[in-house]
Image 1: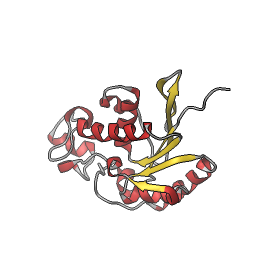
Image 2: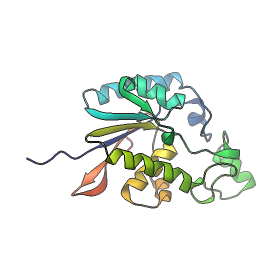
Image 3: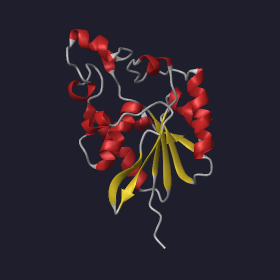
Image 4: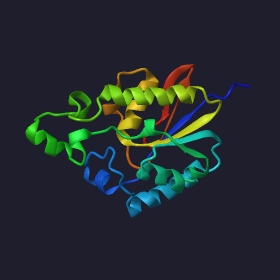
Length: 190
């Protein structure tokens, strides 16, 4: 009988006012919209019965509330390394607004003033993955779009900028694991 391989189930928080409008939401501690709360409750059905050894969530309200509504709150531990990218001066702005002053700007290539670099975020993601690897069993991570896209890139051993290719919707579930001992994405953005 084949040995069961660890799964890392990554869950993006439900929709907020700013995720709905495309505003960069890093450390601003927004609440979920009603539809975000409803979608998080639906996650509970999808996750029911999954035997998680560990559950870690960003301490920011939108992620923590998603974690609780998804039925994972009782065993969850807040992990500041799972907080979203600190967008600095671009917090609350849409990409189109930033591009008025910086044509062609991309967070993936150009970064943000007075915030974190992509390597800073990747460093936090790698610390989380190092802790995940020390767990004997499946781990659920509840966090934010950019952070989780970078985390998945790091899991694959890719440049953190590969995350630009990994679209991730609100209240989505993705699964990282291995395939023939190589890091793999088993399911994405479902």
